[in-house]
Image (cartoon, rainbow, N blue to C red; front, side, top):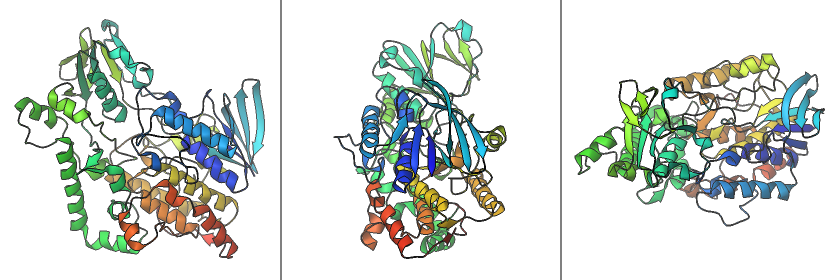
Length: 504
């Protein structure tokens, strides 16, 4: 089958690799002049929150020396290398402007350097990412009175913009804490402005890297999830809820101890600053698609006063800086609005399908986080964002290939919608709102991967023995044998298989 992939970020490239390995002819369309998705737009000195061995294709190790937390340039070089290695057909400067529905797939209209053209494909994979659309607009009355600069983090192309200036950073996501930390070494003063603090993950807990803790099954099995496919895990969550509660309270205590969010600061002013960073909700409630990892210097800079937290809603700008709703003025010459992005608008889709996908403020919940039951010949890569993001894309695209091959029989549309609806309802009841909440898996990656692998007839246990399965962290390489296991299962003749009756 001819398959078009829209977007050349890591999700689009992983999708192309898996589907091509399954025998399909795959073309990747990228509207910009460089592949890489959000990494091609990254601000200076940004690094991957996860470690390198989590953020790669399972069958393509990093071909060059790489930092534990890779830089944007290292990630872009990796993507370019994997395109060359696998011969992926990536067409840069080609924007998909419309999809025309056909009985056997789609007519894909593309605007390229030589004008518009149309091609027919049997299937389309949408891999445009969560952060590919415009930034959220923040109304700032009084903008005309402010003589300084107002920038989004994407518009910060040189950290020299902070030199000697009074800087106010608005927001509390990864980009906001990054910007505040970067500015602290350059600016005359740095204020971090936010409505409500969020949990930030410390990189190290008791000397151990967080990546090695959260991806071990003994840790991931404790995640509060909408489904627990492992019987032992489901039994534990049902009958030992106090133990689960104690686990997460202990984790919160460790986070506080590691970041300094405790009442034992010697300096009274430092205690006051740190109190402003105390999250109001439990850690589990803020475990959405992902939780931002704190830059190593962020909390020490707040303790020292190099970053001054200012808690309050932004009401606008004044001549002197940022005006808060309670009337306070935060002095600033440069204001960085790191307030997130609008969710994807899918402008290339027919209006009826586009309306389905943009109707909900927190995103539309997909079946298995991969397909919309009422949109044929279409799937989504990267809309299952989690701590093992690339592995989740690879396994989900193999799952799509199994559906296309007739190896996996899906439930009726109404049943898929009901299952997706229950997942959406669980998320809304148990996790903090964000515009892409429906597309997040976060710490529930093990439960998600287990379901998809079982449906593919592949063992979800990827370690050598039971002790390792519980205690060793999972990496991308642990899923390198999934394709061969699936192929062997097919040869054994146990097909077609029915989709499991599990909400996921």
